[in-house]
Amino acid sequence: MPILSTMGLKKIYVAEAMTDGSMPKNGASWLDLGDVYQETCTLKDSDPETTVHKSETSNKKITMVGETDTTVELSLMDPDLELMARYFGGEIDSSGGSGKRKWKRPKKLPYKEWALWIKPEEGLFVGCPTTRIIPKFEITYNSKGICLVPMTIEFQAELEVDEGMTDPTSES
Image (cartoon, helix red, strand yellow):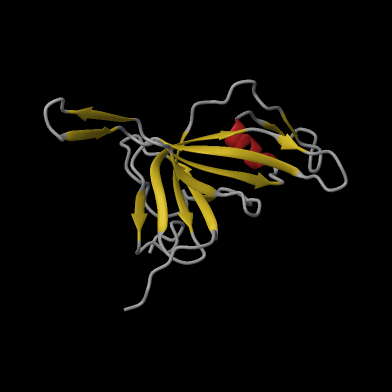
């Protein structure tokens, strides 16, 4: 029997979240999140709140475990104006013509929910039908620095794993 391993990061896909909380159907609504900077992508659960109840008269012990928060943390590498407008909000002003467009970042992020699929180099797709993407700027201005956009992606629904998924952009 072959061993199934999930490793590496091939691509992350996002689509506007459905109002009913379901995962969007495969097709053209799924977009590439952008270039993820090397070695920055991690999916992790928070430590849940635990409450331990112990009996005074016996060895009985009951441990109650609360919900865990799941997040993906990563950095986008050298995003273009379209990606910045997609995640930070704001509009791109194209009135200056090609190569002279402008974008202004709003002070407050708009409330927007996204569905997410993480495609590994090999193995299982991991996703969530409702997430929030919270970006911030981080630019190092020196001879080796580039524009990075660190992001925290907060899962707002259950994590999904799909062993049959190959490409959410393909309708077949």
